[in-house]
Each structure stands twice: as structure tokens, then as C-alpha cells.
Amino acid sequence: MKLENKTIVLTGGSSGVGFDLLSRLVEHNTVINLSRGAPAIAPKVDNAGLEHIPTDLSSAASVADALAKIKERHSHGVDGLINCGAVQFLPLFGADDFDHSSIAKEIAINFISPAELISGLLEGMSQRPEAFVLNVNSGLGIVPKRESAIYCATKAGLDNLTRGLRAQLSHTNIAIQQAFLPLVDTPMTKGRGSGKITSASVADQIIAQIESGRPDLDIGKVKLLRLINRISPFLANRIMQKGES
Image 1 (spheres, rainbow, N blue to C red):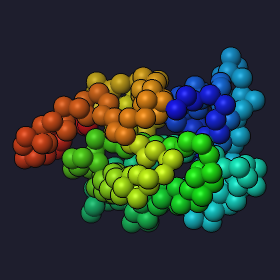
Image 2 (image 1 turned 90 degrees about the horizontal axis):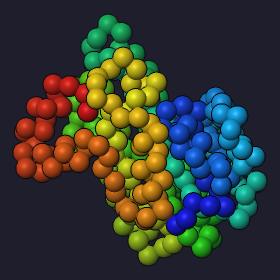
Image 3 (image 1 turned 180 degrees about the vertical axis):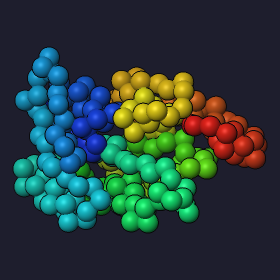
Image 4 (image 1 turned 30 degrees about the vertical axis):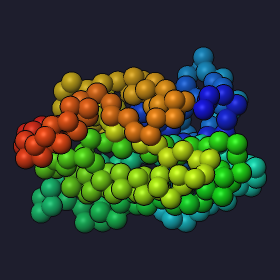
């Protein structure tokens, strides 16, 4: 699929990888950004194709409202959905600063809202000549680390959701894709880890993946992590417990 003159729904476009995806896609497409804050697009970018719908991805009501607005404005359906928005809370269970209420919020943003958006947009996407869903995942969905247990669980769940939907929709015009990211230099990872790759590089690779139709893409160190996990899950687990992905 050539990403030109398409209508694409994107979550998390106000910062990080989502922002770099939005900045590139909006030059030749209509991008509907779903995030709490509006993205600050650089002056050199023509944002005529940008639609921003303020959305709290942790709220089912807010996601439902966003879906209603998308369907009203684009009754012909959309050509693509990129689930990029995510949060990661670091405190360990039992730590003094662990917030019990964060559990439901993290699951809602990282796992439930992608499922809700896919479900809500599926009928319209089926009416397009070709369409795609790309879920942005993490190496932590393959092998978890000591911190961020809920985040790791949501990414593992997203992997299973993606593969299950791919089987369900294999006979349709909708491609179900997934990109697994290593540690990326974004506001979410500020002050953590080393050897990060840039969000711009990740965005370029994801766009190339969508256009090629490749189902799964392991970016950066995730390639090595997956290989090690296949050979020795014990070793992969030890590596992940020592540092950032």
C-alpha cells in the first residue's frame, strides 16, 4: 500500500514515535490524531490534512465519542489505523509510590483502546479497496523485565490480539501488522537506559513496513532478543532483568 491520499487514524501523535509518524504521514495523507493534547506540527509541514480529536484513551466513553466523530466525518471509512499511544508506569508492586489505580489506566490505554478502535473502525475499513491496522508493540511483549509488569503484560496481550485478528481477517482486504520496538529516545524513556534509537528512525521503518505489507517487524535490538529467546528463554530472561530493552 502506497501511503498517499489515505485517511489514517493515529493514536499518540502528540509526542515520541507517534509525533514522527504524524509529521511524515500528514504531508500526503489525512491523519486523524487521537490524543489528549494536540500535536505541535513544525511550520515546514503542511498540516492541512491533520485532524485532531481530543481523546482520553483510558476512557471507553472518550474512545466511543472519537469513533462517532470519525464515522460522521468519514462515512466512507478510513484506510488505516496505527495504535501507537501507550503509557508505562515504573514502580514495582509493593513500592511506596505504586499507585493501585494506575493498573486499570495502563491496561485501558495500552490494550483495551486499541481493541476498541479496531472493532469500531473495522466495518468502514472493510469498504476500502485496501486497508491496514498496525499495532506498535515492544520487545517487552516478547520477554518482560522486572519493572513495569503491567506494561509488559499489555504488550504481550497486544501481540496475541494482533495474531488472533490476523487469522480472523486473513480472507479480507485488511492487513494486520505489528512493529516491535527496542528502547526508543522518547519522553516516556527520559532518564532511562542507554543505546536508544531515535523515534524518527522508528517512524521511517514503520512507514516502510506498512507500504511493503510486511506482517511483523523487529526493530533494532529486538531482532537479537527474539533470536536469543528462541534459543534460550532462560538467557533472554536474564538479559532483560539486567537492563532496559
